[in-house]
Amino acid sequence: MAKLIVTLDDKLINVVSIDKNRITLGRRPYNDILVDNLAVSGEHAAIQAIGAEFYIEDLNSTNGTYINGKKMKRQILQNGDQIELGKYILKYINEPTENKDPASPSNGQSIDVDEQGTSINDTLNQFEKTRFAEVYIAVKVVSGPAIGKEIPLVKVVTTIGKPGEAVIAITKRPKNYVVAHVEGAVQPTLNGVPFGIDAVPLKNGDLFELAGTAMEFIEAS
Image (cartoon, rainbow, N blue to C red; front, side):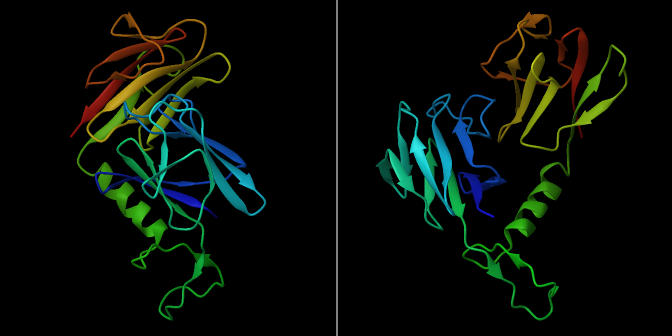
């Protein structure tokens, strides 16, 4: 399966499988891949399947989409291509390589490897293990039927609410977490102040309310 390895300043941010015919990339939280950088447009680019291949198309973004350092409008992606969106690099991988190591599992399945021969899945697993090793990040429900429930924030983007009615998205940035309103006619509030689609930074103890349910942002070592 094709994947995108997302990095910022040579640090791994995420590995995303391209598991549907069309995915969008941009700064707004409703995109399939959130690229949280001011140089990136709200709806910046899209990746679309065409047969067994994928192409990327710039969605009339302000600063453009670059592939391997060259600005493009629409282009077929090749294994190893580097998509540049603002300060983020998204490396496109679409060349399954069978594991030839006799000491590894021999179940006949292939794995994806990067240029250094490191399993992408291994890299992601290690990233997830170390990412929250020192700090516990969660949202705790403090009112309503689910009072006391905690939702650990173990993904880059966690959505909370009922789709089609009221949804917020909490996003992991390199140095903090932010929250944004995704769906719903009534704006949620953060510490009593309404917020919209523009990301708002979170700190330990912040209280936000969504559709009558109050929740607390927890960041504890």
